[in-house]
Image 1 (cartoon, rainbow over the protein chains, first blue to last red):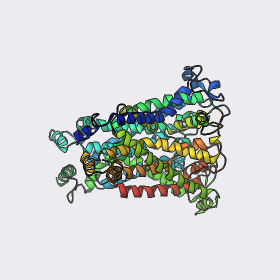
Image 2 (image 1 turned 180 degrees about the vertical axis):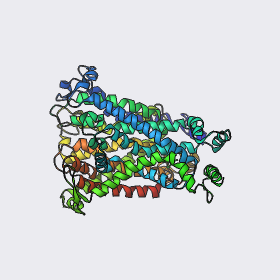
Image 3 (image 1 turned 60 degrees about the vertical axis):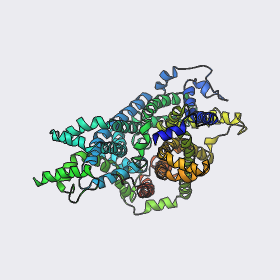
Image 4 (image 1 turned 135 degrees about the vertical axis):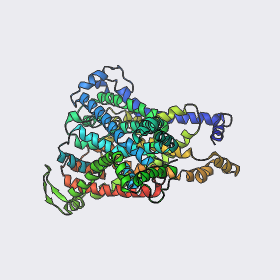
Length: 288
Length: 316
C-alpha cells in the first residue's frame, strides 16, 4: 500500500503543471499562516512612535532590536514576573501530569481491575472539559481553600485538565508494547515498578515526549482560569498580562509583539518536533 | 494463594485477549493493588474537575453577595435573573451562530487544505510546518496582532484593505459589535484550522490506494471520486474533528475577550464571555454559576454525542 501511494505521487506520473500549481497554492497557504507572526516580528522591531504612525509602515524605517531588552521594564505589567509565572506554572503542571498520568496509563493498559472502565470513562469525559466552563466553581473552591491567586492553584488546574490527554496517549503507547516483553522481565523476578521503568519506558518514550510537549504547550497558553484565579499582576502568566495593553491610550504594541515572539517561538518549535504524532495524541485512537 | 493466582491471571487476561474471562480482574484485591497507580490521577480529576463542578451547581442555587458571602438558598432565582436579563436571548443566539459558523467554515477550509497537504510537491513539509504555528501559538497573542491590525488609524490590515481597494478609507472594525464579532469568527477559524486539517490529513492517509485506483478504472472523475469514495472514508476523522471543534469553539474565551471586550453592552457576547462578565465585572458569582451550569449541560450533551458517535472506548 505504501509503495502504491508513493508511486501515485512520483513526478513522472504527475504532470509538471500540477506540481507547479501545488507549489504556488502551497506557497500562498504558507504565507497566509505565517502572516500574523511575521507582522508580529516586524512590528516588534519598530519604535513606539513608528508603530503608532498614521498611515502605518510595513517595514520599520529604523530597526530597534533593543526593544527586546527594554520591553521587560514597561510599566503596564511586570513582564519579567509574568514570564517567570508562565514558566513555573507550565513546567510544574507538566511534571505533575507526568507523575500522575504515567502510572495510571501504564496500569490501565496492562492490568484489569474493577472500575477500570469507569476510570477510563472519567478520563474521556474530562478530556472534553475545559477550565473555562468550570471557572466559577474553581474560583470558589480555591478561595475556600485559601490558595486562590497562587501558582499552586493554577498548577493544579492545568494539571487536572491536561491529565486525560496524557493518560490517553501514553495508554495507547503502553498497549502497543507486547506482553511477552513484560512477562520475560517478570520471570526474571522484576516487580511491576521495575518492569515499567526499565522495560517499558524506553519503548514508549515517543508517547511520553508527545504527552509532555502537548501538556506543556497547553499550560503555557492557558488563559481563562488564570484570568479569574490569579488577581495579582505579578502572579499572572503572559497570556493574561498582555491583554492589559488593549484599550490603552497609546499602546506599546511593539512590546506586546516582542513578548509574543519570545513566548511563541519555543512552543512552535516543540510542536514541530512532534508534528507526526500531533493528531494521534489529541484524538486518542479514534482516527486510525 | 487464591488471591495471588487471581492477580496473575488478571494480568494475563488483560494482555492476552481483550475480553476478560469471567471472574478475572474483578476481585476487590485487584482494585486495592491498582489504587496506588491510579489514585493520584483519580484524586486530581475528582478534586479539580468533578468537585468544582459540584460547587458550581450548588452555588447556582445560592444567594452570594458581591464580596463572596453566601447569604442562603436562592432556589431558581439565579436562573430566573438570567431569563430576566434582556440581552440573554441575543447571547444564546450568538453562541449558536459562533459555534456553527466557525465549525462549518473550519471544516470546509480544512478539507481543501488537507487535500493539498496530502499531495506530493517540493516544499510540502515547509507548508505543513507553517500550518502548525497558530496551533502552538497562544490564541491571545494571535488575536492581539489582528486587533492591532484592525485599528482605524495605525492598523496594518486596514492599510492592506485600502491598498487593494476593498475599502476606501480605514474602518474601525473593532469599535462596533457586529464587525468585531465577524472578525472574531475569522480568527477562531484561523486558529482551529491546524488541528482540523491535521485530523482530516490523518483520515486521508487511511484511504487505500487500491480503492482510488479502482475508482479511476471505473471511469470516475476527480470530483466524483472525492465525493463518493474519499469523503465517505473520512467519516470518522470528520466526526472527531467536528465534535472536538464544537467543544473548543463553545469554550473559547480569549478571542472575543480581546476583540469585543472593550465594546460596551452585550451585542457581541456568547455564553462564555457573559459568564466572565458576571464573574469579573459584576462580581455575581451566583448568576455566573447558573449560566455556567447551562454551559456545562450543553458541553456534557456534546460529549455524550461524541462518546456515542466516535466511540473512543471501543479499543480500550
